[in-house]
Image (cartoon, rainbow, N blue to C red; front, side, top):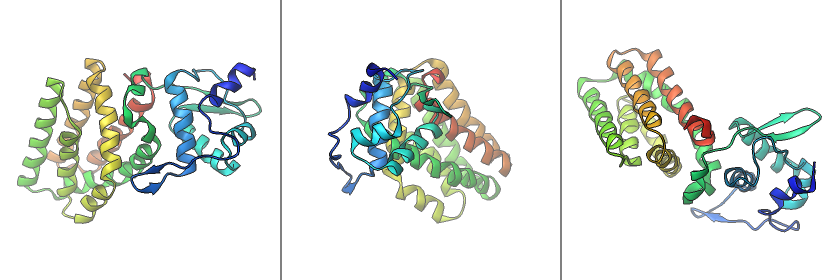
Length: 254
């Protein structure tokens, strides 16, 4: 590893003797999330590019003043999000970069927490869509349909908001007939809203094809619920949430 490559992370790293903990939403931000965010920002800003090798776990520990388990957790999450790839005996390399314009959004520092909330959503909302398809009333289907139409209308006008996106997902949770689904979504509302702000901002400033894919994914979920096909509703919802995650972390999905 060259000195130039090793120095790329160091530019954003705190002093080796310790990491200054940042307060976020009244709570202490996890060290692994902070480290994830530091590396993520370096990848977004081009300080680390596709093919670049990250410093070793030991070097990152020294630069950030954190333990090896913290470093390993951050790297595992970066691998899970498709941003880096580990090659045995060689090290960890950047494999994907998010769209460069992501760095212009203030929420980018919270992306690790947003993606953790997204993991919960895949399981929770996939099952919520399944139950909604099986249990929804005609009135609840109407609410879902109207929420979808409102979202598409905003999307076509280029002014889509996270409120419109949330309304679509909340209407599906409501149609499960089980208040706990909606309650859990509300408990992670801030992270969901933050994730949607980022992805929808990228959609607004991205290609027309990107916006159309989002609308088509919502339409597929609605179609499965309308036809009361529970398994298809679950799969289409989980596919949509997975694609939203990929669209955030991989600029090739733009």
